[in-house]
Length: 112
DNA sequence: GTCTTGACTTCGG
DNA sequence: GCCGAAGCCAAGA
Image 1 (cartoon, rainbow, N blue to C red):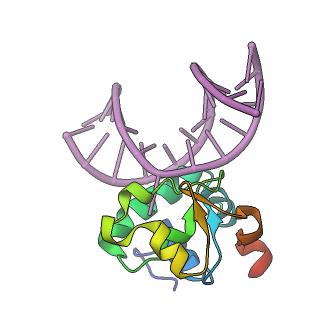
Image 2 (cartoon, rainbow, N blue to C red):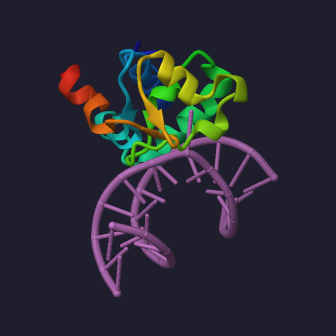
C-alpha cells in the first residue's frame, strides 16, 4: 500500500470490496463512510472503472442502501449478480437481497 | 475552461 | 409510505 501516485481512492474501495466475505453484502454508503469519501457516488464511480481495472472485483456484493442490485445491469448477462450472490449463498428475490440487513457486512464493525 | 452524467444518499412534501 | 428534489465528488465530452 501507500503507493505514491497510485494511491487513488478506488484502490481503497477495491481492497475493501475484496475483503467482503462470501455470503455477505455491503452498501455504497458504508464503504464511502468507512473510506471517508464523502459521497457514495465515488464508490459507484470506482466500481464502474473496476470493470477495466479490476474485473475480478466481487462488486456483486456491493448494493445500494435499499439492498437492491442497482449495478446488475452493468454486470455480464452470463454472470449476473443474482447468480454470483446465489453462488455465495445469498438469496436474491426480485433483484433485491433477501434478509439484506442480516447479510449486511459493515467494514467498520468487522475490521475496526 | 464549463456542463452533464453517474453502479448513491438523505431530506422534504 | 411513496415521489420529487438537493447534495455530493469525479470523470468524460
